Length: 119
Image (cartoon, rainbow, N blue to C red; front, side):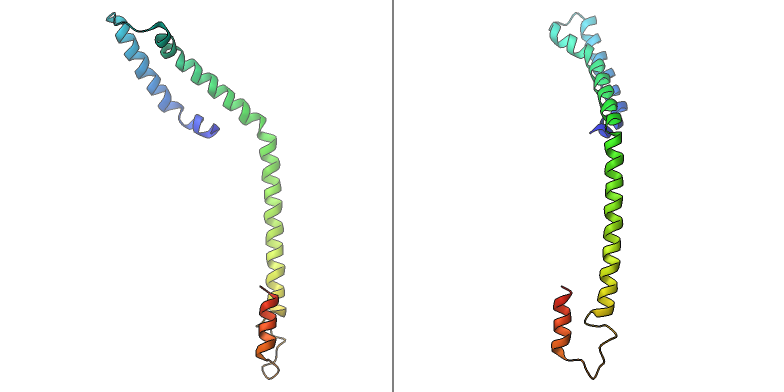
């Protein structure tokens, strides 16, 4: 959400300009506009910038949490890679197609048992 606020700022500023100009045109031609509507239109840009400032503050305060999350995630990925390598090595050494099975000694049951072990 914070990124969306930052990314949409140019489009929002353009929309604010259009709405404010429309409101000014209506006022210039003495078209009746409720004061609350006029105040809302004239204050919406300030509200947007307040929202942007709050988003930047939240983003800054979340910096430490983001950094910690990134480190934890990187550690978990490294652990998973290591576990996967270990599992693959085990499978190659002891799996149903390992080199320790001699063709003359291999039985279907031995192969099935080894396959079941690695499921």
